[in-house]
Length: 201
Image (cartoon, rainbow, N blue to C red; front, side, top):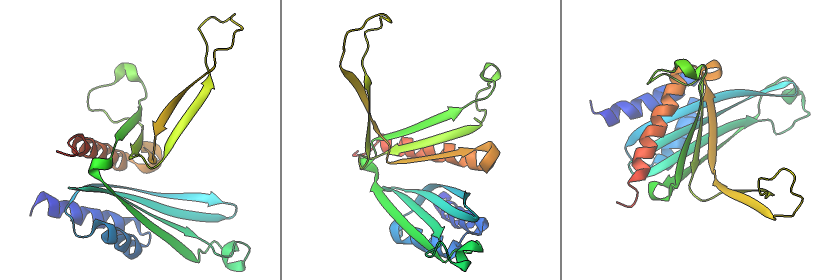
């Protein structure tokens, strides 16, 4: 059995294991993956609280030879004040997916939170990972007053700013998601960074 066959089998096994509308999530992905071979995947299943309701949602990242696919399924109630909504039962789910060519991926940023860094050993898992992927669809500009470094200076120095590219950001942690999920996201980030480094070649 090839590594690619194992990867796509593991992808749909992971989706099934969440128990979160697996048929819907799988169909949403199949539409965008469109038969391409899967190189890596990562998923994040989370519940959030909205008043008296629990809303679940899932995000699945899939890397093929040519594209990055992001699928998201979110459940919601169409009638927020209805008896059905008050019971916590969601009446609908919104499924979306986006496919981005690898040659469009401009940045893959990985932020790690490491506890007790003085005793960190190579290969140790961080307690939290934030993965940010940019492909130019969403740009963020942060502007702040410029200074000259002199704390007593009263002169106007204009403004300074920085531009960030963060089309997609997702945080996973050992405490909330478990060791396996953090490992999965680090592996996905590694494979995506490697693949996007050779875009256009």
